[in-house]
Image 1 (cartoon, one colour):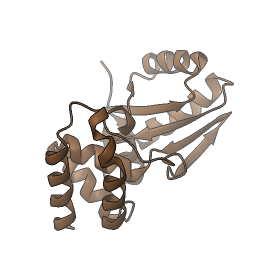
Image 2: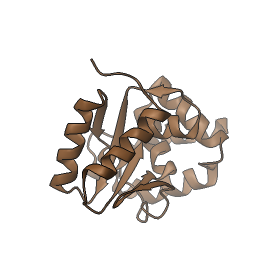
Image 3: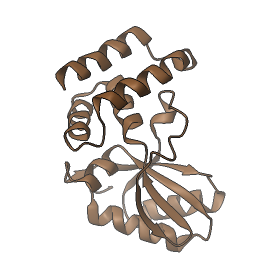
Image 4: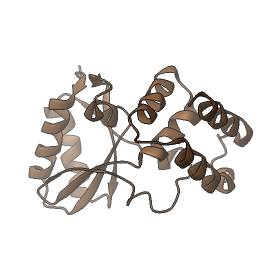
Length: 174
């Protein structure tokens, strides 16, 4: 059975992944890992990551660490679910470097938009926390949504009108 992942376990995963490969890459943490490392959740059920680029050696190392550390690691990020505004890499805050790997939080505004689109109760809590901590501002949320709105057709599971209403609801609340 996999165990919940707290900040100490996320740090261990990052350090061990950096030791396990000499591949040079950026590893973007998203979702619960961002929430835990930013301090509004104590733990998460998994570590969601995006790799740039996704070297085979890095993927093999993740598969091995997932087993040895008894944690769930998923290849998932906002870009898998919604269009993401160009330049997201530059808006992804640095966390730490380990070996040839650089760890970052995936662009917080993109994370907020993906959570708004999904709309689960925990997602709404996370969006409120991102905004309360100043990691996402209402102006940035609006700007990013308007930038990606013309690309929503590329994601057939998204209903653009419902997504827009959900973003407007968040903006009204904040």
